[in-house]
Length: 146
Image (cartoon, rainbow, N blue to C red; front, side, top):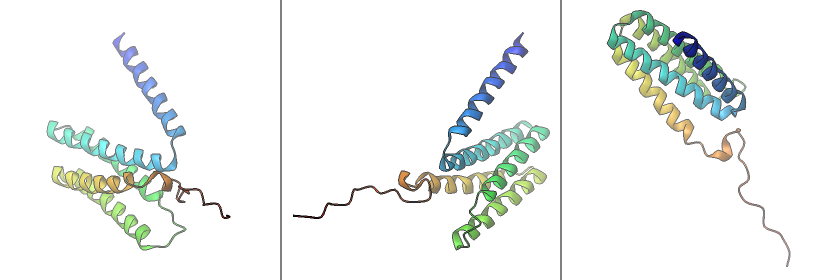
């Protein structure tokens, strides 16, 4: 009976996550990807501490896929330094995660988490008016006349 309850709870949580993703703005979706990657890395670090090799590999694999999702979310129509630098940084983080998996290296996971937290912090600091890529007018133009 407990198993059915657990499965129901997981299914309910999946519905909640699915609805949350469907209702999210593009800005919020990127925040969710950062959160997901950080959660996967934290979980992998816990697996290393417990000696759970299979769990570590699974969580790092998920983290790599999320980081790749962040990389694929970059606006490739723009050829600016920021896009190129983020592309290289996401590639670096993905490669470091794979190295951490191979070497069972908690320090490398900590490095990746630090880099992702820095990126997330910058992303979170984007003012609301810029969440859709175009600044929103914050003040009405003053009327002309006398």
